[in-house]
Every structure is written in structure tokens, then in C-alpha cells.
Image (cartoon, one colour):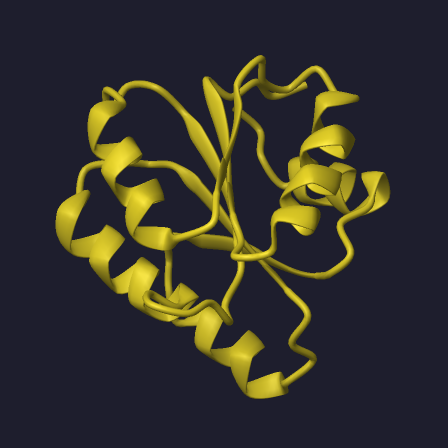
Length: 129
């Protein structure tokens, strides 16, 4: 199974982050799972991580201050050389959000909340490395 140096949970809902952290910790895909209530804080932390290290980011779309789309645009500007896996994790069932996510090459998946082990396994099955 694929392994990540870190998993970032970027969601303004601390309860969602807590539940998702517990769920992800059941899998042996990373020893380090970090929670961020604001996208800007996650971007600051990514800047500290060497680009050779693999990060998986679960990103909410609807957040105050910096929403998921703004996060992606900023990520692209700041980290053009990174190859992290970014998965949108949203309560949005809007088809336009799915379409918009597909426009970002760096987004490797779009999952509806709540996160489940089946959804995680499905997402991980898309990665070969």
C-alpha cells in the first residue's frame, strides 16, 4: 500500500478533522496526520516540507478566509514542483464543483463527506507508487 510522509486535513470543522484523523490513523499510510482549520496555515506548513516528501491533502471547498479553490490556486503558484496528492473532501453535491475540480490537474479525487474507509481505499487504489 502507498505510504505518505504526512497527511493534511484541511477543513474549518474541527469535528470533521478529528473523525477523519481517527479514521485515517486506522490505516498504515502515514505516521503523521496534521489538522488545519485554515487553508493558509496548511500552505505555510507545506512550505516547510521538502518537496521530495509525499503529502496527501484532504481539502474542504467551503471554508472561510481561504476557500478550497483559492487554496488550490495559491498552492499552484507557491509549489509548482510538488507532486502531492490532493483530494477534495466536501459536503457539496453540486455537479459544477466536481467539474471545477477536474480542471485542476493536481486534484486526484473528489469525495463526498463523510469520509469512510471504503472511500479512502478507493482513492488509494488510484495511486500506483
